[in-house]
Image (tube, rainbow, N blue to C red; front, side):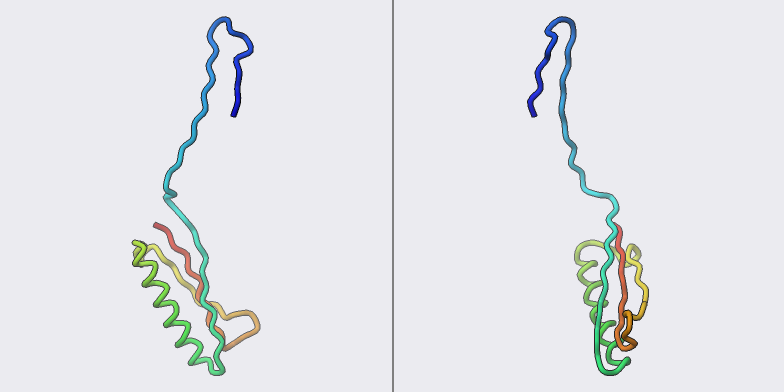
Amino acid sequence: MTETIGEPWGLSVFGAGSVRVEPQLVRVKLSVDVLEPLPDKAFQEAGAAVARLREVLRGLGIPDASVSGSRAPAPGAVAAARRPLTASR
């Protein structure tokens, strides 16, 4: 950045700055998609995948109370389990 003072008489001030901070809130939508021939197996596999995902989030310091989950069937596939998660710190 280049700036010059065109009128050297009187008082002229120029300044520039930047601030970097860690975000206080982050929203992330994650999903687990599983396709198995039987619905019970698909839900079992999806549940295990979600449990692993939650372990990773805990390892990153995100408590369970800051994570919300839901169940929604994958479009067009009854046997698929989809559990979007959002997390905040």
